[in-house]
Each structure stands twice: as C-alpha cells, then as structure tokens.
Image (cartoon, rainbow, N blue to C red):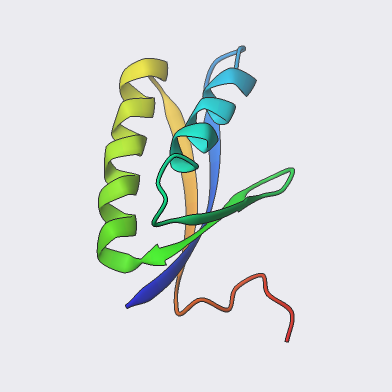
Length: 85
C-alpha cells in the first residue's frame, strides 16, 4: 500500500538546524522513497511497510545522535498529499 507522511523534526537543543538537515539527507538516500521538503516539514512517499521501517531506523538514529527531539507526523494512505489535481 502506498503511503504519505508529512514529518517535522524539532531537536530540543540550540544547534537544531544540522540534525534536521542530517535527517532529511538520510531520507534522501533511499531510492524507494520520494521526498519533498518545505520550510516546516518534509513529505515522504513510498510503500507503507518500507516507509515505516525506514522512519523507524532514521528516527531512532536521530534520537541516538541528538538526544531529546520531537517528531510531528501526519500519515495518509495513498499518494495524493501535496499534489495538485
């Protein structure tokens, strides 16, 4: 099943830009995902099973590297989020 996630990352430290960019850069290394980034969030599209596994891996890595951080996510089944009709 195709899925779309809109995700925002808020590292709870003063040097927050680098961890955000690192998370986005890591997501962009997966060829099975399609990503588009705006000022406040990143939209990630892909197969739900693969996408959830990747998010699990990369979110855990962020927590290990950054410590306290907040991820805000919106999930949608399908692939139409953010696309014009």
